[in-house]
Picture 1 (cartoon, helix red, strand yellow):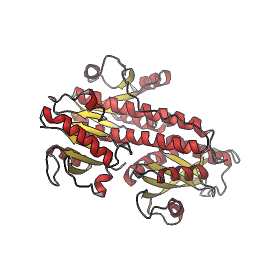
Picture 2 (cartoon, one colour):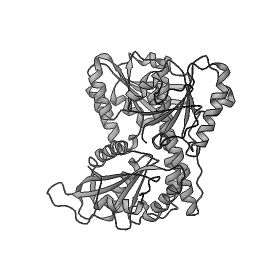
Picture 3 (cartoon, one colour):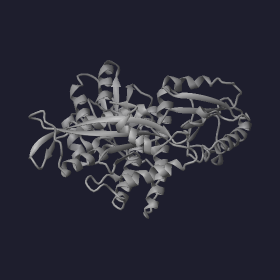
Length: 449
């Protein structure tokens, strides 16, 4: 998912973006600007944007209806509506959008805007849109094999949440004040107490407070991430100023985000909401896809998606008029005995199946892993650029290479090593050729690590 934002401005700024867009640029967004009432067509880079922002700051109340109507018309005419690209309004607090106007927008952001608030919110909305698009695409592919698949929209009602708080307790009361009364927060003073709670109850997210002497908490985050059951479990850090370095270590260990203490109540509630919404939708899709996959053609050994299914899915994507950007991944799996340097030339089917299932369980729900007819394993990341795909793959590799495997033929432990080759492609490019890309992944890779 390339972080490209298109701003529809109510003022003719030429090529310049509004001043508040500097926050997005500082957060590594590519920003394009287009005058809302211009008759000019969009350039290809603007058409590739993953989110639309309608700048309503400073506009008079009388002009709101005209601006919203024009923005919706442009969204339709440029094909963003067909691609389900989210559109967000940036509006003054004094602007009250009617219910009819609100239907045009996925979200409305109002000042005060901070860099973290707007960047995190937009990134999450883009990821939710990707999951929704992939749910629709996957439904079309399943239909080709005679299986109906419901397209579940992202969850909206997040009132009932259960959060696990871990730490000394200084930020516990401010967190409770920041969150709605319907959110249950359970406190654990130590990682062992937190682990006990996790074994007894399911939680929507964990909040880890870092203040002093945090090595045990950093290790707790790292251990949690090594457990496949908590691979995507939302973890947010509340970091005191004196624990900034530990906060960075917590992010490196696998936490999703960090909030400085004291924090903005609005931002904290917003961030928890985003993380929980993403995880709940991802789990919904994962359950639906896993159940439907049992009725699909799969690889006989690993029960991963088969080459036939992958190619049918790529065919569905190639017919999407709005175009799809994606990263293909060739996955080389090597097996080594721990007591010597000999490689397992022919790993048992059971061992290969176990490794394949673990890799599949660590993939995001919107991603896919398949085993081709020639035995090679391929990953597919829709709406994902090379950088984001590489970050996801590094996390997968860290779990797989630390996981114990036993070869049932020899009863010996086996180390598993993963190497990846990556290729980004866009179905809108004239030279897009899925067959050639799958071949080049192993014979002529563009990026390898």
